[in-house]
Length: 157
Picture (tube, rainbow, N blue to C red):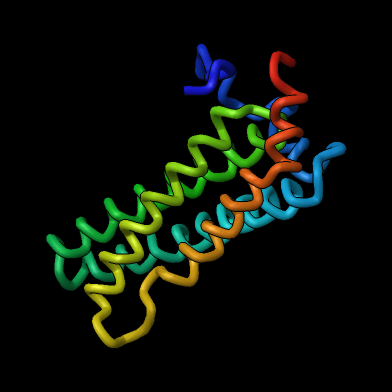
């Protein structure tokens, strides 16, 4: 586990709030690309979650048990998308624990993509495109230039 892990909830929040979302410091190009992939993916996840909430309300009207299940799953997706944005912003600040957490998120994405592909069975790739995009962002976070940048930021606030 990285030594710079958060010790309180406020440590996990992005420095400067959401206003720092678009300020990309002197990060290596690989990390900048990875950051933007994670950030845009999280924002699209929130947009999809909001649309999914409206869809779950429609399903609740016709099939309440199924609609409630969809509603809970959409809420979980919204929480994960929000966490992805926060983790990406902390990764941009040089926090190794955020990079580690995003890597774990890719593992979860793989499991969900496999389950989704099994459920979709012949109706498309499920969540595989999203998984491969997340995998690319993860690989970029662990390349030598990125690794050196994280080592250089070790011990800073």
